[in-house]
Length: 127
Image 1 (tube, rainbow, N blue to C red):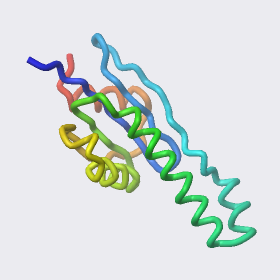
Image 2 (image 1 turned 90 degrees about the horizontal axis):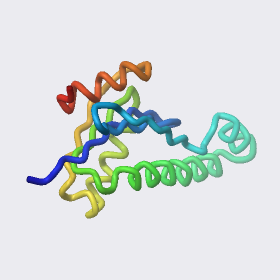
Image 3 (image 1 turned 90 degrees about the vertical axis):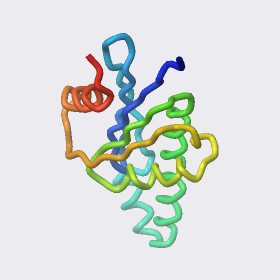
Image 4 (image 1 turned 180 degrees about the vertical axis):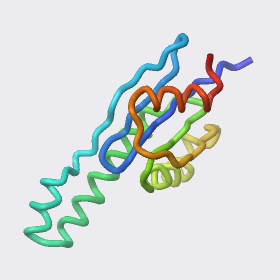
């Protein structure tokens, strides 16, 4: 029987908290988008079109970094308060590397780290 490799990701458009179950504990790491509020204001001050292009470019890089983290996993839970999780899910579904990966998307409000750990444990039914 193949071992399930599970990963949970709480995310919004600025940060992703990657929660990976290992040996009855959850290993947490963060991935941050490079498109900060300051960059948005700076780009917007120059040209709105430039701001949208820069935002799209950095958002794509952010999603690619998260996708690279997901590679090798068999079950993925994307959760969080914004549409970022759906956007990433659509990108993953269009990528043949994730054809055999079970991807679930769930809405969740802002959570503490402990709440995120409990959410992932409950979802994957971990002890």
